[in-house]
Length: 194
Image (cartoon, rainbow, N blue to C red; front, side, top):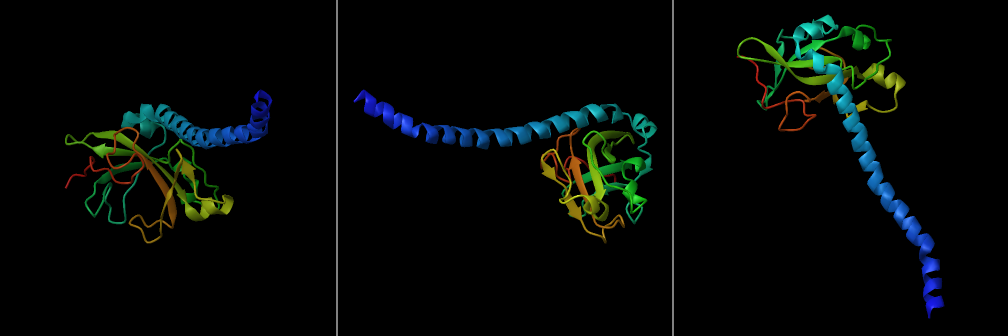
């Protein structure tokens, strides 16, 4: 009887091992993706912590105050679901905005834009990072849209309020919690002065 049980277990051993490998793969892959996203978020926080000071951000190259085609610099959702705030661009991190032949890249530690919420006293506080890539420049050297933090960038088509060609973007609300989502474009906690 003991020999029969041993033979049955031995014949099932390869199936048990295969099942364990599949189970571990299913569990480890999402954890690895989540861990990579978390490490990118940590890198972004560490790299941008000094930019709570707008003076430090501007000294580092974030000198382009972004305005839409109407000259509005505090960007709010026309639908009323919140705002983004005031964006400052580092032109050196988005060369494709100025040269269509420039190679487009994204890096968690070097966001193209810093986003500040205006305060009632006129001061601005860092609330989010925005990553940006012009779609045609990105697509020329990449097979898929950009992604960071485990998130694929959204696409904004030409004819947008900024007058830009199709572009990819991703917001990361790492300095002010967004109750909608860490990566949502609009934050209901941020508002622009009327």
